[in-house]
Structures are given as C-alpha cells and as structure tokens.
Amino acid sequence: MFIAASIALFVSMILVLVRLYAGPTLYDRVLAVNSFGTLTVLFIAVLGFLNGRPDFLDIALLYALINFVGTIAILKFFRYRALGDVSQRPDTKGAE
Image 1 (cartoon, helix red, strand yellow):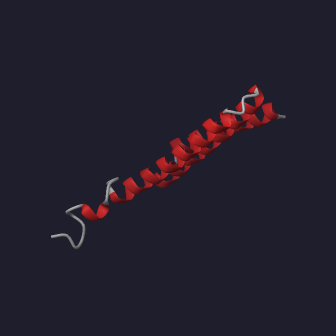
Image 2: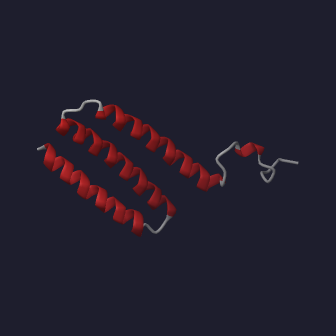
Image 3: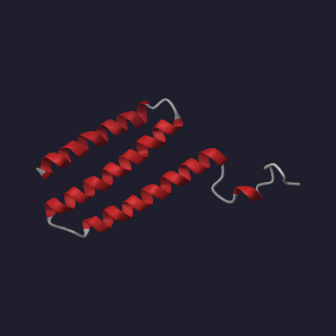
C-alpha cells in the first residue's frame, strides 16, 4: 500500500512540475514550487517508513520548515524587490 502511495506522490510531483513550467503567472509558479516541496516532504516520510528509518521524519520536518521559509522569502522578494527591511530603503514613501 505504501508503494502505491509513493508512486502516486511521484506522479503528483511530475504533474506539479508540468504546472510549474506552464503556469502563466508568477503566483502559479510559486504555488507549484510550494506544492512540490509539500509532496517532497510526504515522499520522504513514506520512503522512511518503507525503509524502516523513522529518522527520515526529522529530515522531512526540516525540509518542510525550509520550504515554508523559502516560499515566504520568494513572495516577499517579488512584492518589495528586497529581502531586508523595506522601511529603510531610500525610495519608499516618507523617506527624505
């Protein structure tokens, strides 16, 4: 049953990669990258269960945290064109 789940996850990952390539907007592509990261976390967890290695769950959780922070950073960069403190930029309103 877990082999079928891993095959289904792999097929879903391929479909998400197709969506990443075909996405017409930036937000479609960011959503596809985030979905790919989520599917990767699930795939690592299932693979760890199949191999009898429960420490793969720690790796999957770490990858999930990196995926979340990376998605937030990408969205912030494309909104503000900077990753640092936006209020300190000289071209923002209210700056002298």
